[in-house]
Image (cartoon, rainbow, N blue to C red):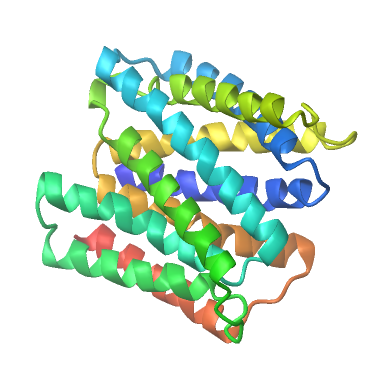
Length: 274
């Protein structure tokens, strides 16, 4: 059940990234992120009420802190995608974002079993290969910076949500979204930028927000049980984004990416067996 719930996260986030990246390319990056976060907040609130739970004050504080890191991470990721492309930013962010929760879970809970540990290592390799959209791309230091920064920030977000108690349900996500909305709005006001994206993009922002809420909620439930596995699954969202780009945007995958999908399937099998 945990694996099934955990897999809903990359499916939801992957589709959200596919739609959100296309919206972000139209300009007004901060306004786009703000609109997405507003609708993510609404969807997470509905999900939290529906699922239930009894969060403690520390749970809500951890959730609130996750809102800051996720807001900063999303800005870095979209800025990297729209200015430097996905060839380097994507794989660096995905692997870094998975390494952080896996490392924290190893310190807190100890080493996983041999089978699960092998699945985690194989999964990291798969995530990297899937992200190699342009194997011949030069190592752009600015792209590396965006990838590392967004990956670390997303990894921190995953870790903070995963450290909440099982009884909290999905409630820790709610204060995180409130903080994220306030954080991005503050940046917009400081920079005196537009507060809403371009006309015609609101329906996409609504869809991204709903999908993002589902992804964060299901990830939190899975991470409360196994942070390392949930963290790896969460970063496989990039692979889902690639699939949607192939299906709906006519993009083609490279041989390395197709190999990465195969490696990711092997990793999933190992984790399930473990």
